[in-house]
Image: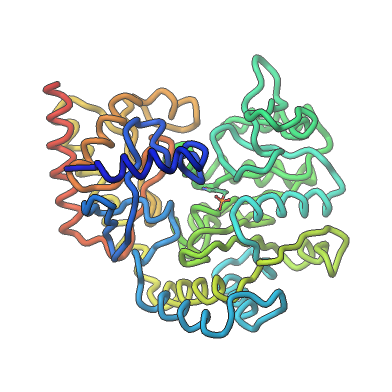
Length: 430
Ligand code: PMP
């Protein structure tokens, strides 16, 4: 397989764009090698500038649940474009999409659209702070909530609960209200509440997809709900990734725990830049122009993006069984890879939630970020490169999640399993 043209494209991009990419993970840094440069997507496939074709298990990091160039989404976008790209004034499409989102989520009465997941989370946190009149927030190590300042934190050393900035450019003052807890460890959350009586909200990915796929235990989420209620804090489910991916009715429908605020992104835009946050009416009433909490966006509710989202969610609404089919395919994939690996003496941990799948080269179950970090990163990098050679495009970091789209067939899954055995055998034999 030649990647010569991708290499050349990458070199040129690096001379003009930092790292050659507009979002860091795309640069293949953690797996080495050259990112492939895409020319087009069609159904389950991606094509690159060298003419290679790959079965795509990334799906633009989640949005494309119906695969590339889904006919109804494409048609809706083309139709919308004919009426104008942006108005900065209300359209009925926004209300239609809001109606659809609300119909899927028990915990959402009202929703506001933004243009990215980062924006959705940043706004949801401001809303939680405004609603509770408190400043501190709790987040979990290994959960990613976009790149806004207060959420770019890493664990402080030793016993410190308050986080340190994880990026230069974020003043320590901006993260001093962010407390860190360990995923699936309720004692660490209790410690946060013991340390601060000013906690506005706890934010969590209920089905974490940013340390690999690590779902929260049901009991842990129920205890989290209880702790928030006892302490007057709001619970935010960040479902930018898991929304309409783990379940079409939100994580609340599969975990039994309801959040106060939900953040969404990816699938709800059908591939266009859309994010959203929603909550019960009482909380959303705090938001400007109804209430005092300010939040705005020139391109928020963009008509073309709304059209794509409407087409995607309408299609999901009509095909409720789709999630089950996708989950079965994901399970077949990871279990097939796992048993192939086992025969070679390699232990894998695998899991699925709806159309999300995850795997770790790890001897022990993965419950939190520390566990995820104990996975074999070197083996993952070799596996990633080998699968690419075989024509399968997996996420280029062991801390990411895989996605099944409706365009991926059983045959592609079987071929991916066979390829994984071939690749692992090759790695094993040096
Ligand atoms: N929250 C979660 C759970 C995410 O997975 C992401 C992005 N992967 C974000 C927020 C940020 O979304 P965006 O990249 O659209 O800003």
